[in-house]
Image (tube, rainbow, N blue to C red; front, side, top):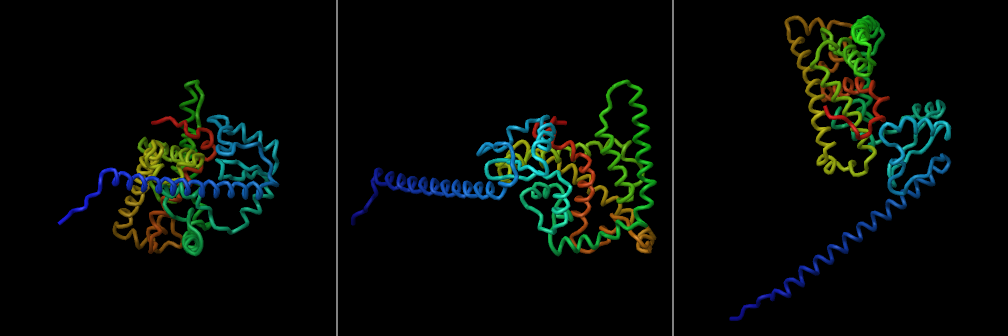
Length: 333
């Protein structure tokens, strides 16, 4: 009986052949992807040829022009040079059109096109797929359910609550102005906004502005906003796996946990209040329910994404003008 054994050189030759074939396949895929990106860029250039813009790098786009605290100045220069609209190339194959003309905005806002998944997907880990990110029939059902929360009879009493929150903020300013030093109003306005939302839409008792535990939540929202803009500027961060391995990805995860913990506390506190004797019946007899009560009494998966999306989204809206300023050069707290 004879046994056939492959020689070491023959085995190495087989492995080498497999490696060569694999390398060729990888090279072929890279060439195909490069061709797709090139054709896509050419299509974008042709589609946007009626909107002039400064020259852009074929790979890095206009990213290098917007460095740290210079972005607002660059945008102002573009508004003067290119009226109505101007393309902003994030990188070679991705572009956004910046609109600053009322007539253009009227046309865009009057349409009902589906929301772009490219930019909105960065918000999903933070606020979930609630009203802000949904499309189609699901969005319509959620919007119809929440419409009563914005009834005039509900909104009128909020004016007094807003005034109370503003008074607390102004009282704090008077104390700080006595120190004869510059006053940064951003943090104060954010806290006042959260205070107003908590009192009006979420039936919270007390003032968040004098509660130091809420400051970490406001800071987390501010960090998340800046991190979203940072992600939009980096092509590699569009891949969830790669982004989760970066320091910004880990930072985003921690900030999301902190923001969600705050939201969960609001939900649990209100649930406990509704479980008190006679409280639920009293709420159901109301002609118009507060926002949080609508969510808690709703059937279906609306509560968590709805509350998180509105509370985090509205509060973070106060940071919108600040977000472009510190792209990725955020200070860790």
